[in-house]
Length: 102
Image 1 (cartoon, rainbow, N blue to C red):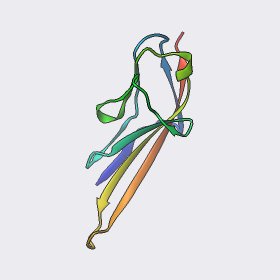
Image 2: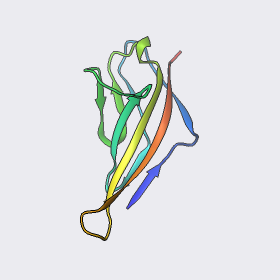
Image 3: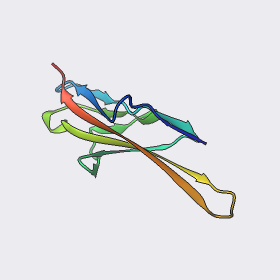
Image 4: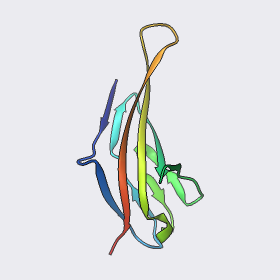
């Protein structure tokens, strides 16, 4: 089992383009593949303009100023332990500040 989080720093800055589709990247990998979840300001990211994509990125359609802020992507893996019906969960998070490009 591995869980790799490629942050480069504790908080990353990513830019979106107003009224365009943008992607926020969450550079995580692992085996087995971790489950990635996204939050904005501590609440789950919801809405028809947001789509969690393969390997952790978040697609934001028709980005607006309301999409600015602090996002957190969290990678979770649940790994079975050697004893029956027990497992351990590994969690890593990346904080991303989102700003308007230009």
